[in-house]
Length: 93
Image 1 (cartoon, rainbow, N blue to C red):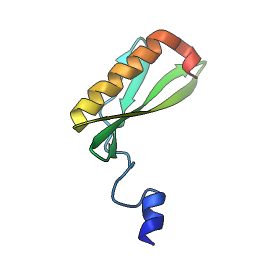
Image 2: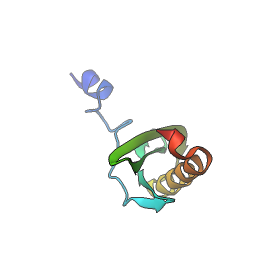
Image 3: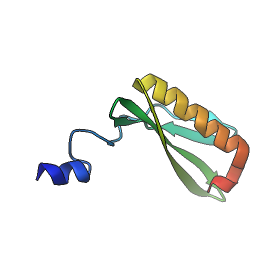
């Protein structure tokens, strides 16, 4: 049973999302940093949202990068999301 929990998110937290940080606004988009606990620290992960024609569009981002602590992961996630927004705009969705 514990093997199944680990595989499907109920295990030791490996790959499990942690508490999301407050959203950050950037050029009309909302960035939600959602670092994931990983071996050796936290994986850069988050979500970008924007209202388009009255509908909330969302894009999830999970990177292979792992940083030492949660605050660093939040900062790196916001930076990567801003970069994606600046480069791709609504093409993200």
